Length: 136
Image 1 (cartoon, rainbow, N blue to C red):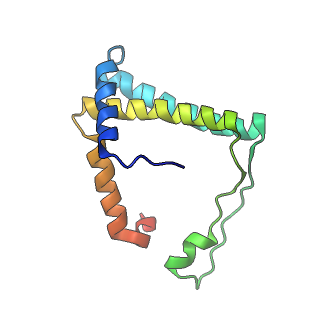
Image 2 (image 1 turned 60 degrees about the vertical axis):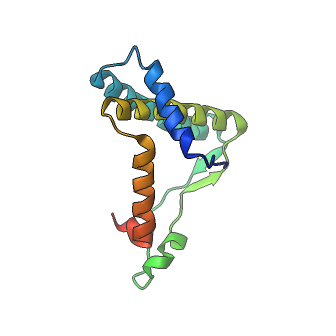
């Protein structure tokens, strides 16, 4: 996973979205498109399991010992995933997440919110709370 270490990337993305938001200018349109876009992300992941088979889900109840410390809970829990997205599924999932990000940025634009500031505040909060952030 590569991460761009440039805070301007998020601002540029949000600005680009604001220039392209013509058809879905209504908050109602953006809210419904955002809901649709997260559904498409979920569907792409499910298709990776059911149609492609590159990843598998093996879900069961998560058993946590009573004596386990909060610092060790992370290691005791399972993601229920096995395998890795193939190139085709990886491409589709990333494309759908990108579309979802478009509508998230659109929502921020309509509400006059800065996506980067929201991400930075959330990052600061989880760093401040540390392991106790898991309790929310």
